[in-house]
Image 1 (tube, one colour):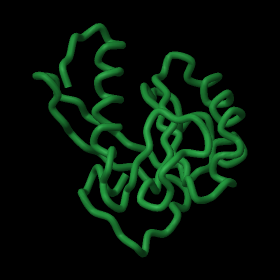
Image 2: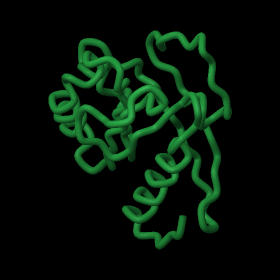
Image 3: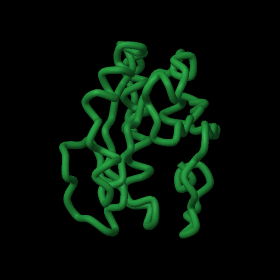
Length: 141
């Protein structure tokens, strides 16, 4: 999120506690998108994140750390939980830390590196394109 919204990366990154929200306004093919990006700190389940945090979301990135199995071992259950709340949302599974691991340990839509920035912009552009298409707008991104 820091790489995309603020174009920066910090080696001293600390895990988000609670919820962190950032906003980025982008223009795609004459459409202005206000992207509200919520980082929910890897906690998906109801006991950690109230379902109300998800309401109104149109797109969901499930980002995991490819170097830490604990971050991807519950993908199926986590996505099933969120899909129950947001059945119409666009979902993308993203493996992060491509700079450390070449191949994702599980199937995913994108493999990124927050450190180098590789595929970060492409991931968000792909989500924006899918969201605009879902709203019935033709877009070339």
